[in-house]
Amino acid sequence: MAKTNIMLYKSNQRKDGRFPVCLRVTKNGKRKYIDLALSAKEEEWNEEMSRFKKDKRVNKNYEKYNALLNHLEARKEELLREFAENKVDWTLNQFEEQFLGVSKRGKVYDYFQKHIKVLKETNHIGNAKAYERTLHVLGKYDKKIKERLFAEVDLKYVKAFNVALEKDGCCGNTRKYYLKTLRALINKAIKDKEASPTTYPFGTGGFEISSLDEETRKRYLLGDDLLLLKNSPQQDKTLEYTRRLFLFSYYCFGISFIDMAMLTKRNIEQLEEGEHIIYKRQKIKNQRKTKTIKIPITETIREILDWFKNNTFLVGDYLVPVVTRDYSGEQLYNHIRSRYVRNNKNLKKLAQKLGIERLTLTSYVSRHTMAMTLQKQSVPREVISQVLGHTNLETTNVYLDSFETSVVDKIAELL
Image (cartoon, rainbow, N blue to C red; front, side, top):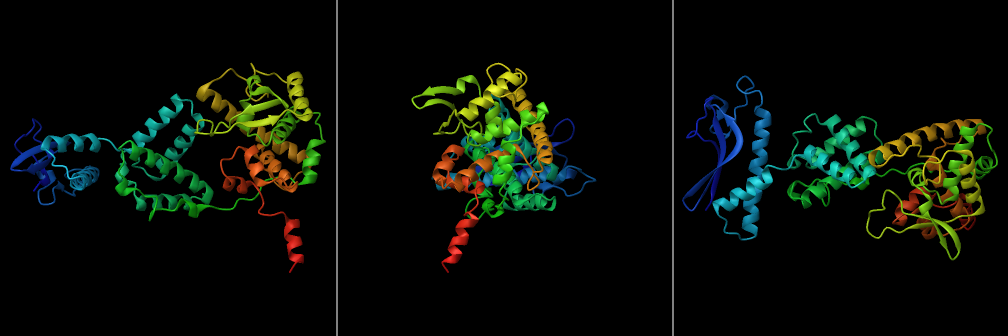
């Protein structure tokens, strides 16, 4: 029968008068003292509780130290349970090796930073930015995030984080974004043995991220506004360039701004049916079985490309004039993001000039408008999903109205 307890190891007093805090493990009459990297003077230690005294006059850091000891205690219990479940007749050295190998890891902030670094080094810049934003928001609500252990990020912690975001005015979909990123990080940490599944805050009986889903207003242009945009060339070169970027996205099956920005001459291929723009979406291009999107270069698309070639400055082999510097990696990502913000400001000016007031005109509206235009022409949703580059119909349904109003009207006549 093994026995364990956290104690002040008084047989090894240091020069400053402090004693190491150790975990004493006893099995088969043998003992091992495992240094927990903490120390205390006798007057700071509560022998009965095996913790630092709750007195800031004696030790101002007692809360932090005791939290760490609680975490180590939980890790010790977890390890003993694992040994028992797997019927391991462990040795003291084996216990020490596994205990220290895991307990010294497990800081949420450090793991976030490590993961972000790997993502940037492998050129997953957009994904890295998502984790950076989530870590930043976590730090806003959790002042101890740099010391926070994965064992502390439990269901109670996640619920409190969600409430804090809601009080700050974050809508359900925004909260869903942050919590999905946090969940993905915890899942990876569990695989890497940095976190334990015993405190996992999601899954069965945990926090239901799907409960945060909110139906968003469909952001698409009505037919008359789309026709106006198509047939209103601008004298102002910036607004004309902005108008053509929007229409290029629309005619290219609603290609996103970043995907459009990254297109080069290498994306044009000659197929049996004619020339096509062929690409994979930046946000999912590294996922397994990601399909390519093939866009036939129609006369309308070719005319816009020719206009860009003759009226704007194209860097290198880029097809559209979004990228204006020879950047790569994170610099390129940040450059495109800044151009994205500028383009949306110009789209707002264009909408004001044309009198489009129903919605705020952004580059994303072209994607929704394309999808809704195809639906109005009775194109099956499976086809719309394919040209949008979605991996499932559920995502496509976010873009589209449930049913056309005319369809619902006809059904009403049957009653």
